[in-house]
Length: 321
Length: 242
Ligand SMILES: Nc1ncnc2c1ncn2[C@@H]1O[C@H](COP(=O)(O)OP(=O)(O)O)[C@@H](O)[C@H]1O
Ligand SMILES: [Mg+2]
Image (cartoon, chains in turn blue, red):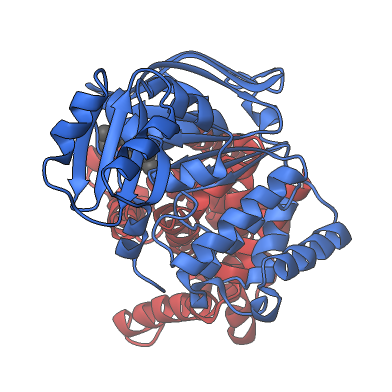
């Protein structure tokens, strides 16, 4: 059952159409990721879903409620983690969480207990009394996530949760998101890191230039764009003329030497390994490894959108704390 | 009022209003104005005569400058977005963000009264109307500050834009230059400014010297306050949830 249903949603800023009539749905209990390059319209979409931006056109239904007309009702059961940590600099970690809980009408005792619980769970118990401005980037992001789930929301929205923070904190945050999801929270997140989408999300929407160009599970996205079967052999030595020899013995396949000791064989049909092993053996070549090559999500993204997207190692650009 | 309302108000009081710069402002401001009159008049200052003016200006400057922090600054920091996406109605949210300024505006007004109590005889003052006048001045100037805070995006712009309203009001509200001494072409302008009505009410309550009927002043101030508040929340809907 889908908990978020978006139909023909669009957003115009003056002359610029940042989101161009997108439709998608998010199933209850899943981690759904919006993957796209900078400026694709990810933040604009999250802002519309959470009530920070008014759609120019289209419909949003969240848990059966009209997400535009009844947004104040919807905001009671959604949690929001913005792309920048935006808690109060002057307040301590603990005070920040208690304050955020009060916005959701939680009682004083309940607020304080929940704040303590989350500080402990996020490994921030020791720094709960420090002012927010003294936190490192990674700690700030964790506290911002804690603030987003203080009222135990049904749906959690995260805008680029790991952008610009150190690799270790990023890893911890991914684990926290998975853990929340295992406990029943539906997660909608955006990212421009392909590996993050692949590792974390059950389903992914590719968003490019304000349009959703594909929505599917990671496996299905991988399978559907795979038109050929490819096997890669690693050999113990180099042999001159191997390519043409292979080609002659196995008509209908494509051969490509990718390095001195590696050769790739592609075919629209399923590839039987045995005949190839016999071929190599007959030519006095030992095979050290044979593996099936699958396209990466990066290649799939490139194929569908024509855009090369950032790799995860870009995390370094934000710098360690 | 919801729990969120009280907690937003308490947070602002704790993090902004009770901070030393704010407290000292409430004391330094009336003292320096009184001193200015003292010097100008060569030592013979009519404290009771200038009391309404000093009170009104303490409120005006105190409240309008505070909203530059509680709203413009929080918006720059983006923590204001947190409030906008909280399940609290925009009207309650903006009331929560302005009530602190109103409360402290009223407190600021009574600082000069406290000083004056040591120096002169304060008998004969209608305290009830004095309080009502101060409250209405605090409400309208706070909402004027809100109007400014909503119209700008930088803290320094808020300060500059506020002065655009504040300084003309100081000279045109009739506190220091009686309205009938103003050039004829400026008088209509005076009657457009909310402080003119608040100041007149204060003069009436403290020195029995008002020139506008009290009911009219109350009516104008309430209308001004409501108008500025509604216009500001409408503007927030339109501009900040964009
Ligand atoms: N408030 C705004 N006013 C004008 N243009 C905007 C505004 N917000 C975003 N945009 C534009 O909309 C496009 C999408 O932005 P955004 O949703 O932030 O992308 P992403 O989050 O995917 O990087 C960009 O071209 C951006 O410049
Ligand atoms: Mg973004």
